[in-house]
Amino acid sequence: GATCGDGVRRRSRDLISEAANGGAECAELEDTENCNEQACPVDCQLGNWNDWSACGATCGDGVRQRWRDAITAAANGGA
Image (cartoon, rainbow, N blue to C red; front, side, top):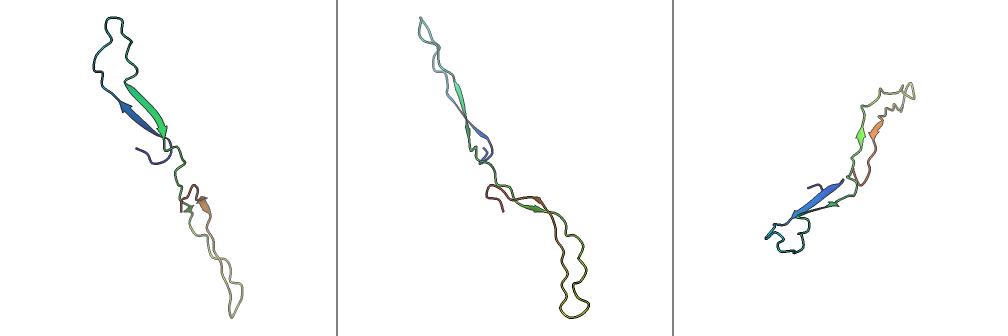
């Protein structure tokens, strides 16, 4: 079964004897209930790196940068 995200738990029982001679009809033989309804963890997914920026200096300690977009943000305890 599912550990998150809308699982369903089922149980059943056997019919031992049918109602007879005016006895009460049997109750349901199967039963279900929702379980593990908490949202599933979603891990962060990142896109490809963009191109490098121009260097911040023509000599010495210049810095170039690049970035990438988050396609999917982490949610519900995901990484």
